[in-house]
Length: 288
Image (cartoon, rainbow, N blue to C red; front, side):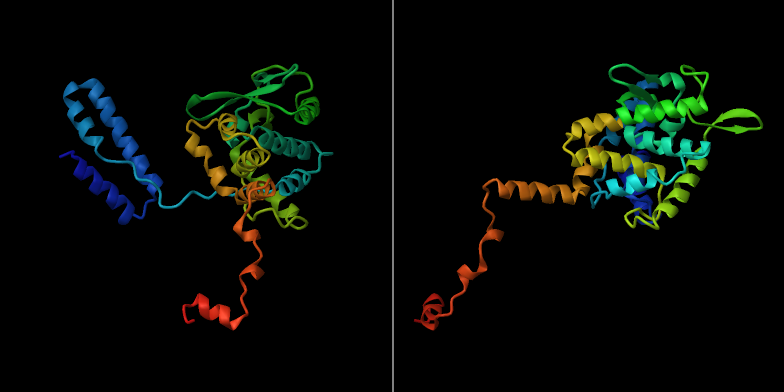
């Protein structure tokens, strides 16, 4: 019963009847393929089903994925919002600084341990990403200064340990900071900062920092392959959304190109094509 036609009908049902997105459709297809690959490894007679499965194509999205990101001014206003004179405000501000500097996912941030940092000429932090992918990200000098101040307050006696970098105390026990806690304080600071910076979006969530950092790196000239490595993307196509989304970057590139001697028809004065002489107009229209 497992034919390419049957599977295609199932995927069409998901998209048309259930209202699932193309991404969900492709995820279901990937799951079926993974199972059949496993079945073929266990039993050689299942190879025929795997071969049949390969006839079903992955569906390409109809539109380019749009991403939401903050301007550099919005990021600055948001990071400045916590009161760093309090211990909680210091923690929240440094969390945002480190999340922006590294472009880390929120879970990668929550998983950082004290011994994930490497100091020296080129300070770095090791992040544990999706599917246990590990990547090392360099840290800026200003971030290191904020890190040292944070460690002096939250980890005064321990600098190299497997304890979580960010934590909360519950029942006198140290516990890693929760995802809900991060989302809660980001929304609070976003609402407060929006009163004096209208560029901050209504919904400030952790992944917004990752998108913003990637977009700013790209806008400042970093090659997309380096942005891909910075973010830990397994496929360059995932990183291409930043190139598609950055219309301002494209506008500046066009301005630079035209200012370097490339003539644009837009720059030609329309007055050159205005003809007021009746005889000339008749000749051009073939009436004389």
